[in-house]
Every structure is written in structure tokens, then in C-alpha cells.
Length: 418
Ligand SMILES: Nc1ncnc2c1ncn2[C@@H]1O[C@H](COP(=O)(O)OP(=O)(O)O)[C@@H](O)[C@H]1O
Ligand SMILES: O=C(O)[C@@H](O)C(=O)COP(=O)(O)O
Image 1 (spheres, rainbow, N blue to C red):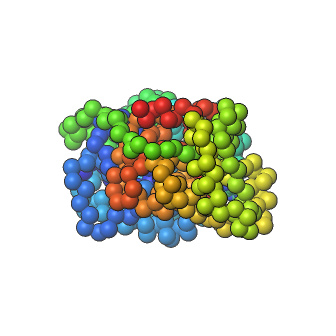
Image 2 (spheres, protein in one colour):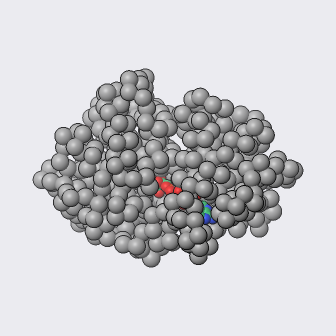
Image 3 (cartoon, rainbow, N blue to C red):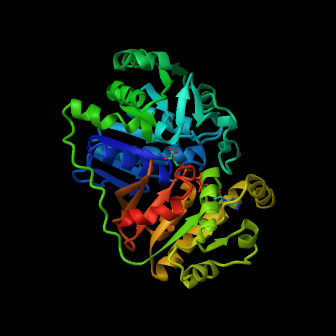
């Protein structure tokens, strides 16, 4: 194995696995910390999907270290920690603490951090993260239910999460090319936020990082890795296998993301006549709707369009529910409902599920008992169809980051399965 990657959520893991697959690597995506002693066969890269973004920092550290140990035991030359392109975290973690723990495990004192993903309008300039034309702190991410991002200065954000020095390798250096970046990385003690505005910047950084045992970032940072491995003689690229034989059966959309993009996708789908059931956190908490009610709704639809069940709501509605139920509890309640609903749907003959939201996808995959995924065709940048390949029922699953995808995503995704 060349690359062993640890992703802090499920949609992030499929995003990364897609990027590496497109670069010609044979990628295996597994769910949860693999048991010690696991052998991964002949994959070039293994991506371990965790659900560690919003758990207590110590828990995120121990899960990530345990996953890294298994990857290293399988001969991984380089470890990557994948987090969100919008740097989703709080002052308590978990990006800084997990980087600290992985550096300690590897006996290293330096790494880089770069969440840029230009194809999805995430760029880093002078250490500031932009979402489209807006600073992260002015984007809808400021109202994320679990990780509201109110500071766009990543040097400052990461500085609050780690005791290590946090430096900046700015765009002037990146523009000078691989040697200039390598020179800065060689002299580094701590973590460097690296500016990146274009895919070319990401390739430069990927090449320059070849001597680092640990790299960290969004999936964009993986763009230059396959080419760097090829140059080092480590990789024999394969044609990216994106065909997927989806099991026959019905499809449904489950949306637990409250992101602006997902809310737009819901509006679009409803306007096109997609049968839709809206869930409210209070309704679930008070038992006014059950998983079986929601599954029956989906089953009863005879529309050619896949039904949509969503809890996605505007920030003020989410805030009100959190005030009544507690932030963690509200999130957990809705996630558990979505996870159980996915299980119920499979009992009703649904074999194709499109899930919006990283934590939501994590809950769905956990409850379905899916242990590994094969990457299929790309629907939009960062979102592929996948096929569950481990234990549990065989399902076609599209696990969409809340923020990704065009407005017509819930309609167009199905055509990519043919
Ligand atoms: N109506 C709601 N009220 C409160 N919390 C909600 C509601 N709908 C969804 N949530 C929670 O918001 C969180 C959304 O996170 P996630 O699924 O990761 O989406 P994203 O990909 O946009 O980050 C989940 O914990 C989910 O359960
Ligand atoms: O890097 C990204 O933006 C995504 O891969 C990602 O991590 C998705 O997280 P959610 O937005 O919470 O789904």
C-alpha cells in the first residue's frame, strides 16, 4: 500500500476515494477502525472512513491512531488525514488534536494543512479560506448545526486547536513551484497552512509533500499524489474503474444536511414534483412520527421520481430545536432516525439510497452495517455512486457532502447509475 488515509466522515472518505481513483490508484474504502491484523490485499490506497469529526477530541485521536496503526502495519508509505474542505471543527478540535496524535505516532514534527478544493469553490489565500466569493465566516458554514465556522483565518483556527506552531506557506511560494514549497516544508517545525487557489497549486503541493510522512487536508490535496507516486516509481496506474452494477430495486433520497446547497436541492426537487416528506426534530423527539411511518410514505409513492425524506431546515429552525433538545441530542436524534429509516427502507425493497450529509451518511452506513465501499461513477465533483461490498445487503449508495452538488442533484444522480 502506498497511501493510508483516515477521513473524519463518510462523505469526506468517498470524496477522497473518488479523487484517488481518478488519479489511477486502486482504492479500497473501509468503514470504521479496521481490526488489528486486517490485511488489505493489493490496494494502492486504503481510505478508512471514521465518524470522528464531532466526537470528543480524545476519542477522535484514539480512533485515528488505531486506524493509522493498521494502515502502517499494511506498509503504508504515507498517511493522510482527510477533513472537510470547509475545515469543519470547533476550538476543542478535532483537526488539531488528530494531527498532533498522528504526528506523535509517526515520530514526526511537521506536516501541512490544506483544505482547498477549487472544483467545489474552496480556495485558500493568505491563510484565509474562501467558499466561492465569500470568506468561510461569511458563508452559510457560519450556521452549521454542529461546527459553525465563524473565523476564516486558518492559521488562527488551527492555532486554537494545537500547541504546535502553525505557520503559513503563502501563494507567492506555491506559485514559485514544488522546490520552493519543499524548501519551506523541510525547514518547518509544526504545521503549515498552505495557500492553494487552483488545481495546479494542489499538484505543486502534492509533489512537494512527497517527503512528508503525514499530509492533511481536503480531497484536493490528494490531486497531485498519484502523479507524485508515479514519478517515484511507486504506482502503476490503472484505468479508473467507474462502472458499477447497481442492484435492481427502488431508490430514495434521505437528507439530514441543513447546508444551503442541500436546501436548494430539496427546493428544486420538490418544484419538479418529487414526492417529499419533511421531518421535524420535535416531531421525532415526541414520537409523532416513526421510522415505519416514513418508510411507508416512501413505499406508497408510485411516482417515477425517487421519494425524498428530509429533516433539512433553515438555521433559525435548527437553532430553536437545539435550544429545546440540546445541540448534540438534536443531531443524534435525527441521525438515528435516518439510520433506522435506511434499514427499514432496505426491508421494503429499496436498494439505491442517496444520502445528503456527512454525519447523516455516517449514521446510515453504521446502521446498515456496511463495512466497505467500491467507488463508481462521479455524479458531481466529490460525490460518486458507490456499491457496498462488505457485509450487509448490497446497495448502491451516493453519500453526498451537504455542501456539494448542483441544484438538480437529487434528480440527475439516478441517471448516472445506468
Ligand atoms: N431539523 C433539524 N434539527 C436539528 N438538527 C438537525 C436537523 N436536521 C438535521 N440535523 C442534524 O444536523 C447535522 C447535519 O450534519 P451533516 O449530516 O454532517 O450535514 P453536512 O454534510 O451539511 O455537514 C446532523 O447531525 C443532523 O442530524
Ligand atoms: O471536503 C469536503 O468538503 C467533503 O469531502 C466533506 O468532508 C464532507 O463533509 P460534510 O459537508 O459534513 O458532508
